Image: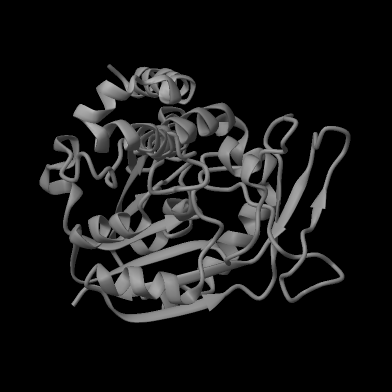
Length: 324
């Protein structure tokens, strides 16, 4: 019996109980009075417990749902990801390049580009890395990553998979030594799609060499329409500095540092959709920023019709920490 069958059965019992509770013969109740009197309330309580909406309680939402949503969304936008957001990618790459000393990427480092998408981090750090390995949930994104690498004569390689599944914390597909011993691991605008970002931090930290660096690029905390978030597999509305610091510290990392990029970045919708999906691996928030309110309390969204060709403007941070 699956969850749906359980709910249907409970609903039947609850309804029957509500209808018949007052018709129980007195003789029957006298033999099991406590249960007879409490049965309606116990069943109703149990029914309410098992039918709590996952959208209002993120702890009940399953990893499978989040993974499926992300795979479906990014599978659709993979081939148009870079083209639709060329300006945003250039701006992001420039911001990262200017902060390579801040991130502490050493020359000839081995890079783990997690939630790699089409490979922005791998490309922007190419001159500083001796090897880059990407991992992404989306088979289509991995395909674009590898096709670009091949066309550019690069040895970087991406693989489909998930390092942050609590049901499979040690995936055999990534047990080989080549998936460990990294000098730097990065997540470029994918962290807010993770069901368990704290687990992801720990898993990535474990794959670093001593002295290695984990860095995250993501959105500053903001508001978003829950319905819009659900369509894109979004589980977190950006992060505060304190949230990221705690996750890094819980992962055993030290020497934490955090910077916000000075200018917000505008992302375009990757395909026509009533809810205005954004680009790339891990992008889909309506950030709290507009031209009249630079404190981050508004929303800056441009749209045409059903948000075809829409765009959103968001503030970005870079956070980093080291493995002792």
